[in-house]
Amino acid sequence: MTGTLITNIGELTTNDPSIDGEQTGTLHDAAVLIENGRIAWVGSAANAPTASHEYEEVDADGRAVIPGFVDSHSHIVFGGDRAAEFEARMAGQKYAAGGIRSTVAATRAATDEELRLRTRGFIDEMLAQGTTTVEVKSGYGLDVDTEARLVRLASEVTDEVTYLGAHVVPADYADRSDEYVDLVVGDMLDACAPHAKWIDVFCETGAFSVSQTRRVLEAGIARGLQPRVHASQLGPGEGVQLAIGLGAASVDHGTYLTDDDVAALAASDTVLTTLPGVEFSTRHPFPDARRLIDAGVTVAIACDTNPGSSFTSSMPFCIALAVREMGMTTAEAVWAATAGGAAALRRDDIGVIAPGKRADLVLLDAATRVHLAYRPGVPLVKQVWKDGVVVR
Figure 1 (spheres, helix red, strand yellow):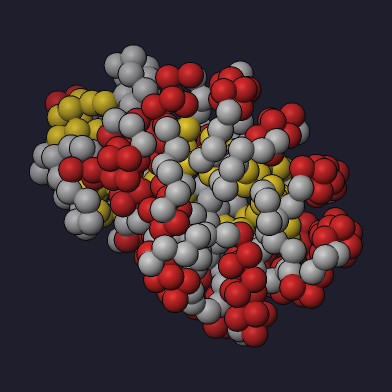
Figure 2 (cartoon, one colour):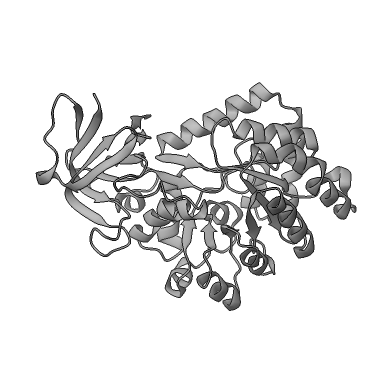
C-alpha cells in the first residue's frame, strides 16, 4: 500500500477557509487521500481518486473527521498525586500557586524510568482521545539536575518541549526569589536549553514578578528559545503586555484580562490559550472566549494536564466546557483545539486537513463535530492517524 483513502466522510472539518469561506472549512460527503504521511488530496467523495491496490480504503460510513487535536499546554512529566488537594478545593479551599511545591519532592525522588513510563502513559491517554500533537513543560524539578531530566524525558515524546524552571520558587529558596532566578537563567538554562524549544514563566502573584519574568524570558531568547507565558490566571497583571512585547507565541490562562490586554492581543500575533480544565478544577471563573473572539483575538484550547489544577487529558472534555461555559460555538471550540493550538505552537503543518499538511486526523463515532460538546464524557474517538499511520 502506498496510501490511504478515507471516503464516505459525512462531515469533514478541514480548517481550510478556502473550502467554503468559513474558519472550519467544512465539507460534506467528502474524502481524504493520505500519501507518505501527508495529506495528498481533499474533496468530494464523488470526485475521489479511484481506489486501487495502491490505496488502503477506509469507509467512514457517514461519520465526521476532524484534524488531530493540538494540545499546546501540558505538564505531564511529574511524580506523585494531589487528589487530596483537589478534594479540599471542592470543599471550599482556595487554589494558590504554591501547591506546585508538593509535586516537586515526588518528582525529584522518582527515577527516570518511573517518569518515562508515566509520561508515555499520558501520551497514550491523549492519543486515545484524539490528541496527535502535545507540548510538554518541565517545572516540577526546580533544581538543575531534575529540570534537565524533565526536558530530556519530554523530548522523548514530543518536539514541543518547554523549559519552565520558573514555575514557582522552590522551598529551599524561600525569601530568596532573585537568587533562584539567577539559577534559572544560569546553570539551569545551560542544562535545559539543548533539549527545549520554548521557555515559559509563571508570571503571577505567588510565583514570579514581571521584572523577574522579563529577565528569564530574555535570557531564554538569547539562547534561541521561543517565549510563552503563564499570566493573568489568579488576577489581572502586567504579564500579558510583557509577553506580547517580547513576541511570545502564546499567553496561557488569561482568566482575568483587562480591556487593554484584549486589545493588545487582538493587535498581535500572540495566541491566548484558554485552559478550561483549570477553571473546572479550581472553581475560578471561566474566561469569556466570546469577548476574545469578537475582539479578534486568536484563541486556543489546551488541557493543561497536571496533577494540581487540571488533571484531565481529554480535549473533548475541554471543548465541551468551552462551549458550555465560555461562550464558544462547537465549530469555534474545535478550531481552537486544532488550528488554534497549532498557532500557539507557531506550526503551519498541523491542525489543518489540506494538501501538503501532516496527515493527523481523527475519525469520530458521530455524524458531526457537534457531538463533542453534545455528548460530553462519551468516548467518541473511533480512529486516529498520526503522520498517516493509524495509532488508535
